[in-house]
Length: 399
Image 1 (tube, helix red, strand yellow):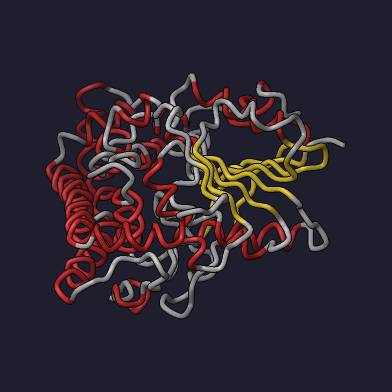
Image 2 (cartoon, rainbow, N blue to C red):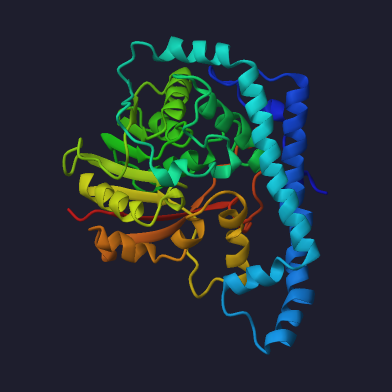
């Protein structure tokens, strides 16, 4: 096993002002989970392709006299293979253990975390909660990522438990690949925009579906003269995210409880930049076009629309890869993942009012935190979501 295959220790996580205090045994659990996830994604995960090529496809051809027609036939066939069933069960268990580890760590010190959040949040006009905002059923009906209560659950009114659990466990899930602050997506977007338009100075930025703001904070810090408004429907995540951002010096941010389906509080053409990061796949097929339309409406002419998301399942993507990417839809409580990735996103954005000829799809190079993690080798490929490149759909709105 090379140095690139070994996750950094959990002690490498940056302890910002809201990060939970971690004891020795708690860190050891996360170290185990990070190593397990890396091993499952690498050495053990590679066995899925071997099983597919050597057992599953020959058996399918013998039974049906043809190749599989789509990823669903691949999934049904692979679910009969003992290696894939073992790998899938271990991967699901690793997600459940990650949530249990984070939840236990947070609940042990919830009084302190809530007190720290109140010190940052009380009286701040940059945290704007609205109890009338309903949690969408597509968010509340399942525990997304196996997280108890999803992003919205509270142990008691006004707490930060969901946000703290989410933040403290990302490092283990990704093996540190998102950096010491778990903000690799936001770092990558900020770097891409600065390289693409070095002299651009956006005044107002909207981040839809921000959770704890881990991808919005690096954008706010990279563009300190901009007002960055981060919205979500999950109050516990917003409480934690706002306090986290303030502790990191992102004082140009506003965290606001509202749904991206209804941005009527914002005027037409009121933002220079509207974006989402790994959010679209968590939307129902009714909510997705509404959010795309609202994003296009509030964007100024000449502004940037930017969606970080997994690539669509186009005809050039092998069925085995589609099947592997679909794992989360069936095993990690991501019910809309599969349907979303069958969409032609350029068509969806065009229907929402964004001209197709002004759109682009681009691979945004990950910004790897080399203080804690070796850089990705040149030409490194995606690992079904833990990637050297972030896939993005976007466009510059016509003047």
